[in-house]
Amino acid sequence: MQIIEPLRIPAVARLWAGLSLPAVGDQLHRMALIWLSARLLGSEAGLVTAAVGVVTIGVAPFGGALADAWDMRRTMIGVDLARAAVALRRLRRELPVLHAPSHGSPRRRLDLLAAGFRAVAAHPVFVYLLARGAIVNGLWVLSLWICLSLVIEQRQLSGFGMHGLGVIGLVRGCYGVGNVIGSLRAPRPLPMIFAGNVVVGLGLLGLALARSAAPAGAVVPLLMLLAAATAIGGPLSDVPLSTLRQTEFGNHQIAAVYRLGIVADWSGIVLATAPWLLGDSSPAGVMILCGVVVLVAVIAGRVLATWWTRRGGWAASSV
Image 1 (cartoon, rainbow, N blue to C red):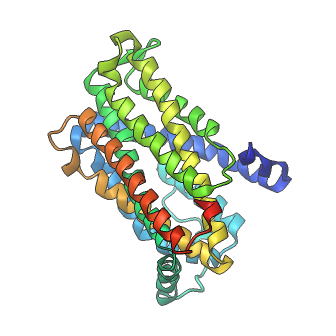
Image 2: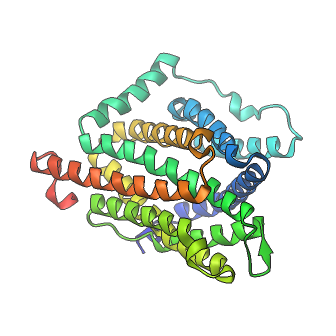
């Protein structure tokens, strides 16, 4: 698979190996946090994710500018150590490496974010892709992290001798398998992005209907299977999006566009996970609504891409 090819480069392989263990920890932490939030807060569990999103939105536009002024290797190591220190509640002082001076003024950092807006403004389809990212990522977090956790908690689902957080672990593990399967070559990026979102939308609908579509003993296995299928849509859209970002923008624009994408994605997550959307609605019903909205967003994007191509704004080979 194309996704594995960079691992043939020793430096990339070492970097990937070094990032893999923290990534596992991130997922375990996120899974346990959402599960605990669902148990304690019920329909207001989204407040926890929204709080994380607010912090991310505040840091994303300027974090890259700060990091550019520091040694990247030391920054990566230092940030991971700082996170571990906070989690263990043993270290209360910032690591020395994080005190490196910044060479960018606040105005300069705002200029970097504005540069992302200017670059994307010349590509209407990319404006759509930013909005699509906000919608899809927000509804994805709401459905797969919050609503699904609430369904498992409220319905006391169990399978393979596990219940509660154990079931969440089984479902998330299968989701990870689907992510790997979905990392395919994308000769025509935009159709792959749309296809990936269609898979996600249909997957959310399937997960929402799983409990009523299967016998009690088969619900958890069906959720695992549907989670793996839904996960295929993630890299099907994410990898081509990275390809478009790398090929449609100049080297001096890529970082700014990437930061803008982070802000858009987390803005969507903050809005989608606000308790007002769940309210008194059933988690399964909200998941169905999320799946439908994702599919509608795909249709809108397909129409926009066709219009932009006919105007000569995008190569036909891309769409």
